[in-house]
Amino acid sequence: MRIFILGVGATGSLLAKLLIRQGHQVLCGDRDLVRARAFLGEHSTLVIQRVNARNPRSIVKAAKGCHLLVNACPAVFNKTILHAALQLRSHYIDTASHLTQSPFRPEQHRFDRLFREKNRLALIHAGAAPGFTNLLAMQAAAGLDTIERVQVRLFEETASDNPVSQWSADDSFDEAVSRPRIYRNGRFELGERFGERELFRFPAPIGQVGVLLAAQDEVVTIPHVLRVREMDAKIGGIDIERLRRWYRQGKLNRSRGLVASRFPATPPPRVMSKLVRRGILRNERFAAAVLVYGHKRTGHFMIRWDALFPSLFELRQRGLACSPVAWSAAHLTALFVKHMPRELAGVYVPEALPIATRRNILRAARSSGIRLTRKVTRLKPS
Image (cartoon, rainbow, N blue to C red; front, side, top):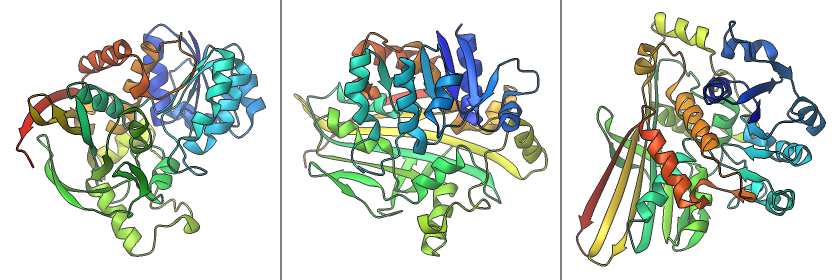
């Protein structure tokens, strides 16, 4: 396919390299060509065009003739880029929603009829979390007759004295100042910011940590596909604890805006290598767990999937200078592209993809360096 990637940051630059390995023809666009080139590397021959993501005409002009438009920009640009994809008559992929006008329904769904009319597919939330976590939830649910509760638990930690962004500073800020969505007793609600602390045990070497409610997109899509009574998502690690402290000090709110010292721009590979050599950045980790509770004929069960992604230290051993979050998002998005069912039309979330597609992506994820484990626990009757 001829693929145009809009947004050449930590994730978009790595995704471009992965898609080239798959044999696709890849072109890129970004508003800052110098920064985009820093992420791609000075030896990269990829063509980068200057594109204004706020202007559909600018996108259409740069991406003319593409079969797939990949939105690797902050989610605030989703609607503009979706309009551009429709004008291009191309397929579309993104990794997150903005959820401003409707907090419990992704804004991308408003384009479903238009994509159906164009006979094109718009696959949204096609990353690691959301994205891969949605597939794990569906895989677990397939082993049960009825579903009671779904829990998503993430671990994001940057071992650094000062904040170092693992992914988009804009999206990170947007998530930090948003109230978390929860699904309780069959209804969507807004939860308490950084609330409902619990202790959760991730696989070694992480272990037990405190996790807090977070604004994750899985919660606003999975209940529309699965018949479930409760769902929430929580995050643990140094990063979320730092955000909680700023929030309690009154330093974290939308009216104050994004403060660069708290949400710095994601460092390109060369800068990240310098931070590591100087001991400023010691390590980064990312892990995801999805727990699904329900019944099948023989009793009450909990099916748990764990995904442990390579740490910063492990990635550096492979010769890569990128964060675990960027690595996981790029690799999972590349797998969604590889197994994208282009015969479908309309707006789809990962959990609504055909069973064969979901299985192919999960199978490919195992061989890409993601450590996946599945555990089934029989629960005592309540």
